[in-house]
Length: 148
Length: 162
Image: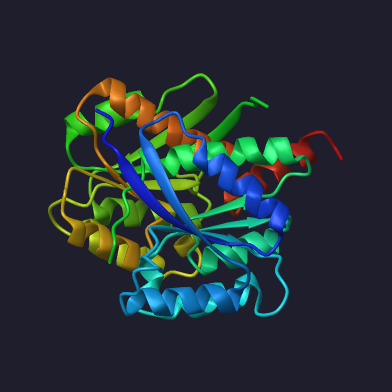
């Protein structure tokens, strides 16, 4: 029984090409799913988004899922991840990291910080887009998430 | 892109009917899921203790599927305890339950569950869910390599004299 699910995704990604790629992949779903997404260009922007969300800003609805690029300048993905996991409310939002790295140390560190998934950005945009579609399929159809 | 993968799943579930159903639904052609079953939180903790001690009968799981509604220790307490452990705390845990309660979902995510699935009613739906799950966790997602895999590889190396 397919019920319409709306997943609010916060995409934390600085590269405009990747932003577009991920948005398109998430938008193209065969199920009855509407993904609403918001984009933050950096760790700082993402934290600001979450803070606005906490105080009930309508333009910044509480995300059900965060897709986080680790390879960003400035605050960076890891620092953002650490900070949100330190917050009692934010830590309940599942985070899937997207990164070029397949280093064991990096993977281990992310799981220590309790990510809900670690996905390697593949060299070919088409392959990566396929991966994002499968990821979206899993999350929208399988994993329940709630607005806190 | 279809490759065969072998994955070790620890299913923590007390109902024998559900155990069978879930085990069956995890069987698929693309991914070889090796399913170990614990009937309770306490049993699961014992299993993981054996895993830590390199027990061949209890390989470290790649993924834990956890039913929240169990007697005794209960799912949430089990989750709390394993997340407090440095070694096994990095194993992703997906909650599998019939509970519709939003409170349960939020609490589970606060305890750092990596996913929450409401058990569907039919076997067919469950099979779809498990196929999606297997594909995400064992094809798409990168995880920390469980220790026992390294051990087996070392053994193989020794045997072939390399």
